[in-house]
Amino acid sequence: MGIFDVLANTKKTMLPERYKNMSVKEMEERVWEIKRAFGEKLFLPCHHYQKDEVVQFADATGDSLKLAQLAAENEKAEYIVFCGVHFMAETADILTREDQIVILPDMRAGCSMADMADIVQTEKAWKAIQEIYGDTVLPITYINSTAAIKAFCGRHGGATVTSSNAKKMIEWAFTQKERLLFLPDQHLGRNTAYSLGIPLEQMAVWDPIAETFEYDGDLQDVKVILWKGHCSVHENFTVENIAEIRKTKPDMNIIVHPECTYEVVQASDYNGSTNYIINTIKNAPSGSKWAIGTEMNLVKRIIAEHPDKEIVSLNPHMCPCLTMNRIDLPHLLWALESIEKNEPLNEIKVSKDIAKEAMLALNKMLQHV
Image (cartoon, rainbow, N blue to C red; front, side, top):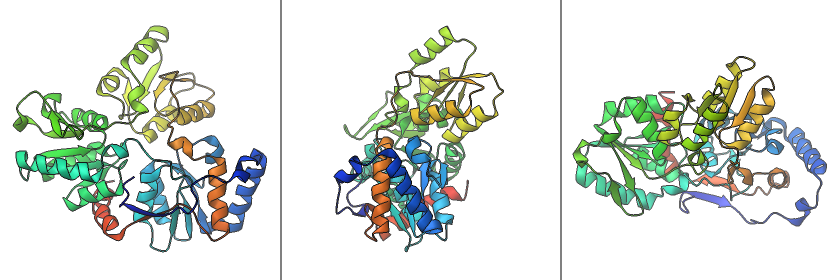
């Protein structure tokens, strides 16, 4: 989270003791009571990776872009309590009306990937890249990035992408400029570019800490500059995990998210966005077998929804996304009761200047969705 990106009402940051002393049943009854009282004035979107204890109250579930779009389309909601992570709530605030209030139940719910590209590092990188390549590079950012990074891309003619439309957006980017800078997830950028026929030899990694390229060849041969960032969850799936499945369950399909490493994606049977994974399993024949390489809360939910199929996590020792897990029932209730008292906590408000430029990048993507 960039400290200049967002203005947040965080008068209290520690969960009050009374929520720790309430039973699950008490908290659930209070959440339902508040939802009934506010009706359409309250909209509660939940990302696929959220805990079941929170998802049960969702007015909508989906990936980050879908939820932000649904929030933007919701004309009646006065309060949008976004159960996800910080960059998602930022995107919702950018896309919603000025008078709608976006709240994140726990401000600790960040995203390690988004935090791997801050605006100071990015401006430095851009200067170095311009010195080498001149005006031949278009910046593209995964939607899993801060509002400031989205604004940077908007300011320089670039766009945002999701894992669902990354291929389409990268194709568009190459109609605009000869090269692209892909922030902040190197794996999604590499996997998508490779699927479009760009060889690995034409991809270089920019290390924002060392402030240099990781590349052995002639830099003029580079078409895709990958920011050295990653998802801490998806990077934990390995080719060894795949080898174990191939050995013990050779008839099992392996499906992974493109935030996994290039080696894992190449060794799997299928790869695609969260929605792609959900729909592929949903449409698979009864009795089919699947190992899924994505976040554990979602995998467990998919397993519960498809008892007619044999489904396991590709990595049996995988933990849920720790920052997604910050949003729990006590924090959700605390956020809702703060609204009830007309003292909303953790309001996410992106500054107008940042929002205006970020909207340029988002709109470029939305035109191609």
